[in-house]
Length: 345
Image (cartoon, rainbow, N blue to C red; front, side, top):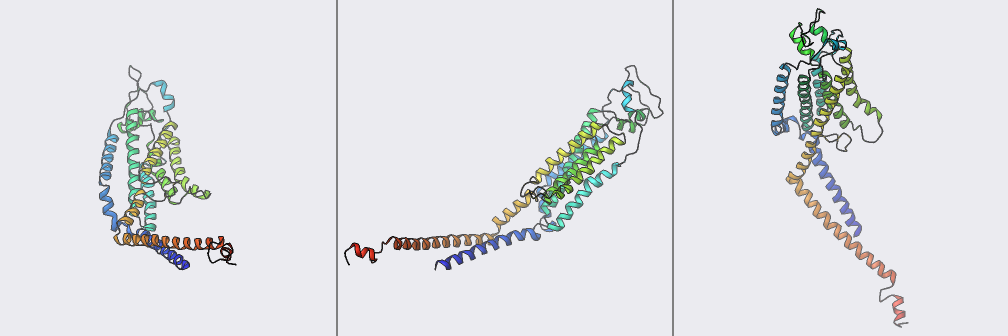
């Protein structure tokens, strides 16, 4: 009888596991697609998208503001006479590799897992990282007004320098080039590159479980690749004489810090056991398990039956153990030992 109860208990545990796996499989296999949950997720984060629009408007305003014209004396021109060169990395290419490339990776993982929470939050986090970095970078540029290494040729394209009675430069070059000449610190190319590609690096480290303690160093190569690309962009800014090395260093640090903050708003740390998915995905799993009526009823029934079976098996095993102990100790009144003690022999 005890073995039959144990077998029934084992069956109930297996059934319970099947129910839980089926509930999770429902979430995994298409329950959170763009079609089913896209509008719901977008409405829930409508205020975040409005803030993104506000950040975009602030960025446009900062771009049009005239930067602070820092005092530049003739003796300071020694480090500002580097030649005017074209950008190795054009400005128009920055959104291509820092925004569109990461979004393409996000879409790749979406088509593999069909998780709209992951797609939406990764895109939202990336855009926040880019725009917050842009606002910080351009606000500092405008406030600091540091001259670029090629400032001399922007200010005096004919090579004839001119200074006022205070010793400050009197530029006669193109107004747009002079304006850009005072925007050296920090590097916008570098900060945006590290914001976008740094976010992508964090995203990939979570998705491929780079820090699962299994020692797969090849995964680190995948994680470091976007960071290497962003670093090379920063190096190109120094090689093109558009920035000083301090501008690039601070710009890269700024972009990477903002990317880390924005990523952690939506995703666990990459080294966490759940680092492969967004917080919202795991909340959806919990809500699905608690709000599914049939699943809840079945789970409760299984719990009740399991508890009853455990109690029945424990009682039966306890009775059998007591009987075994009693026989072992000779407590049976009909046993030979008791008969001898009572003088029946």
